[in-house]
Image 1: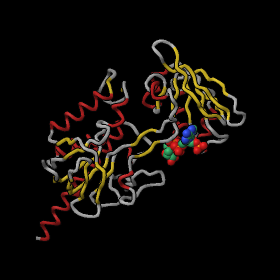
Image 2 (image 1 turned 60 degrees about the vertical axis):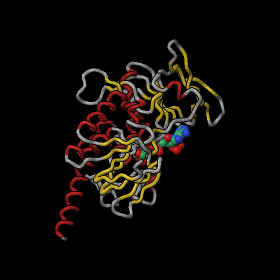
Image 3 (image 1 turned 45 degrees about the vertical axis):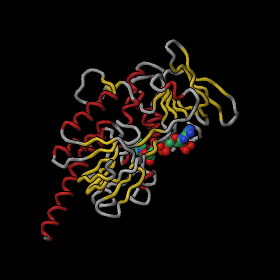
Length: 321
Ligand code: NAP
């Protein structure tokens, strides 16, 4: 069995960012390998209906979109490897990646597209109601709650933006926050407080997502006041959890520059990280937009940046001979 693989370009992570990087890199003749990670296809594989990816008039399924992207990446010459990277050495050239099964990957350039995971509250019925009322992305799923009562949970920029966004679809939006002041920027707070479709419930924690109906779906949220301990119910059909995301950057701590929230820092307008030859794209470097299409866009940028880097390396090597 092969226990080492050498490549000009390795891509870690197989969501829209990683697969787009692979498609562009393969078409540039770099014969990339893409290492899929624990969740092949990324966050879109746990989404159902996708209506905002350009090019599809009808509703498409997230898992199907990712299968198509992978098929396209393979068709143009990407080698897809089912493995999970457990260690990286970015101090030596080529870079060295260690796979879960003991394979070592040597790569002249590296694209990191390991993504991020939305944080959830961890309540007993939350998992069961995901896709049936509970979501962590109003921009992705808000459209399905047209004209319905909805709630957004959280007090940061994301929560406030999601509450504002939901007023495009609903005249009854409740923001639920665990404290008595928001963490969101003032300009967003001003817009929130000025919007008549939004009310805020302060000092309250969601203690249960209430299921009901047939087929079973979200019908309400049980809230516990942090001031009185009293539990009350808010009737909603959509509950958007917006309490932050965790970028998958554990592997890169102390190896690449990360920002205070743990996202990989890139040079403005590029995908270049603090280590030359290492590029980052998608949600692992973007905490603002977080859409499949923006992830794909930065994936394309990473492949172009990597191609340029490799060409410069080659030119330098030739010049040195
Ligand atoms: P965030 O700023 O970390 O805010 C998370 C919010 O969720 C906080 O209000 C927090 O409450 C609350 N929260 C956390 N855990 C909770 C729990 N278990 N139960 C209930 N509430 C909980 O996250 P974010 O809003 O996703 O933003 C992440 C980063 O991206 C920030 O740096 C933000 O500025 C940036 N961002 C920027 C933009 C923009 O510039 N337009 C848009 C989105 C995000 P506490 O306040 O009590 O801690």
